[in-house]
Length: 37
Image 1 (cartoon, rainbow, N blue to C red):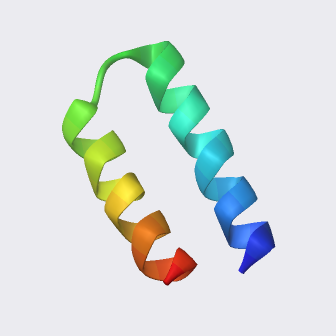
Image 2: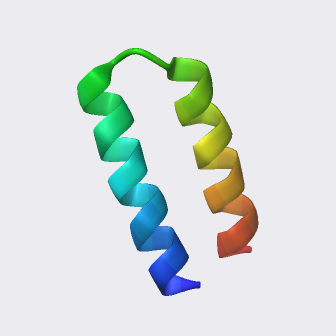
Image 3: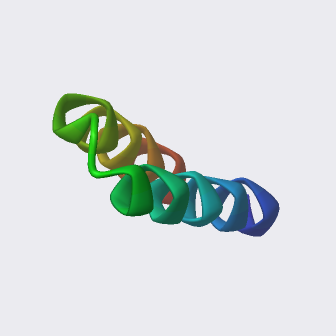
């Protein structure tokens, strides 16, 4: 799970930098939350 979380964090950073898909970021955060749980 730690690896998945790290990947999600990287994706979040990329999307954040792109600042182009807030919805996508939210979706990734939801997935990360589910994986974390």
